[in-house]
Length: 223
Image (cartoon, rainbow, N blue to C red; front, top):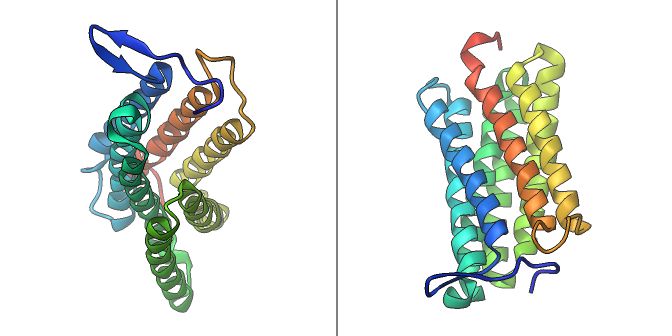
């Protein structure tokens, strides 16, 4: 049971667990899908397409987490969380490769290939470890490596060299994602009706919107 878990509500005969957590998850999903549909046709450049797919798969994985992992966990069972975990690995992988291709122009060919190969190996290991250990901790480790180490470092280098608006907004987004993680880790909430998960989801929403702004404005800036 989640500490400070939202009380269960009933709509007619339908039981909904953690209703505020579900609601904030769904708001986050809506922003993800909005970002996807607004950016998928912006450019044929691979990095932009990958960031768009990151928005879409993040929305899908969070939707599954909201319904299977929170609202109706009593029906699906804890093992069903694996679907959200797997999609979470895929979504973060898209952001990882998006950053690699976005910074390709400033990387030496050998370094680009090294990042690409290491990332492929890490993603495969993340999938294997998730099913072997059956733990969300694997997803967190994958996220830390992919988003905080690979994507952040590459986009920081890109921003320092080119002042890319996309890179800047991605870095802002990662910053808000870190705040969300800290709220989750240290259980920073306002009680059972707006707990640490709900606060974390708010910062996650700000994070994804910031990243969306960077991708949306890609055509208006010089890279």
